[in-house]
Length: 114
Image 1 (tube, one colour):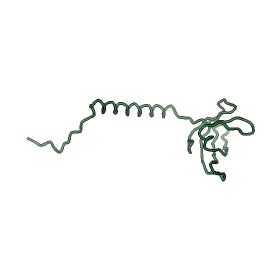
Image 2 (cartoon, rainbow, N blue to C red; image 1 turned 180 degrees about the horizontal axis):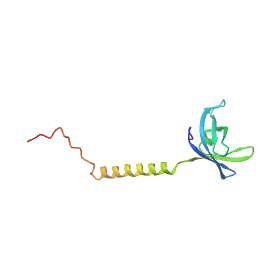
Image 3 (tube, rainbow, N blue to C red; image 1 turned 120 degrees about the vertical axis):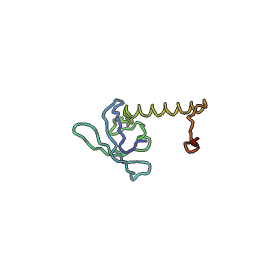
């Protein structure tokens, strides 16, 4: 689900159109609908407020004035790399546990000078 501060790519006529940042999401008067304030990253910057339902905020196509539109979430390549590294680390730890090679904890309190 689209959230505040997310970056989105707006597809216009089934082609990438422009990027925007979600500034604010507030409930609309109509249940199940939201007022979505978008900072459109064009020159000059513009602010749009669109009224969208849950499905449209999740990427379902809709039309405005007969023009097909769709929101697509944008994830930074840096964030994708971080997520991939976390996933690999979790998989490595799981393999170690399954193989019985989990790191051992040695208590320093039990060691006595002889």
